[in-house]
Image (cartoon, rainbow, N blue to C red):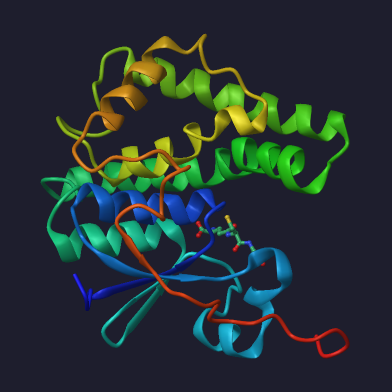
Length: 223
Ligand SMILES: N[C@@H](CCC(=O)N[C@@H](CS)C(=O)NCC(=O)O)C(=O)O
């Protein structure tokens, strides 16, 4: 466990980082975790921008490769590890469809409601707007899960990991998920898989946490 092959750059509060950390945990893969202080401008430094032009976490480094965007990281890891990626081309396409949809509807629903409520102090009407958007997405997921155990195919895939990642954070977005019974059963099923941990514990759990912040924010006046 002393020299893991993957390095994950992220922040403990990030749901998008959690998605990547969750896949690594479910696959039983160790990784070197590098904390990036997203609340102190660390994604905007020249060094970080040279690594990730999008100036966001998560970032995965694997050998010579640097991969960004949580769903692209999930696809990369699933292919590299040989698990959770879908069993044939058709499933792979279905998985990409779900990840594209959740990236849009969940990031602009749960994720922004949570950000506005927990970190940014958005106007309550704005938070309500994002919560409603999340609830409409829950309706759709719940309907799909009425006759499916998993979003795609017969077992868990990165489509489930990607979508469920933010649902575990729904309470922090001020959302009560209890009306969506099928959706709740499904996130429950995912949470019973070996290696699963709640976002409160990941990426701390199973990660080798670097002792220092890797990318320091610039001093005042230099940014
Ligand atoms: N589309 C991106 C979104 C990533 C994202 O929003 N990252 C946030 C943390 S959850 C971030 O790095 N924020 C800091 C910043 O934008 O400077 C993905 O799926 O990875």
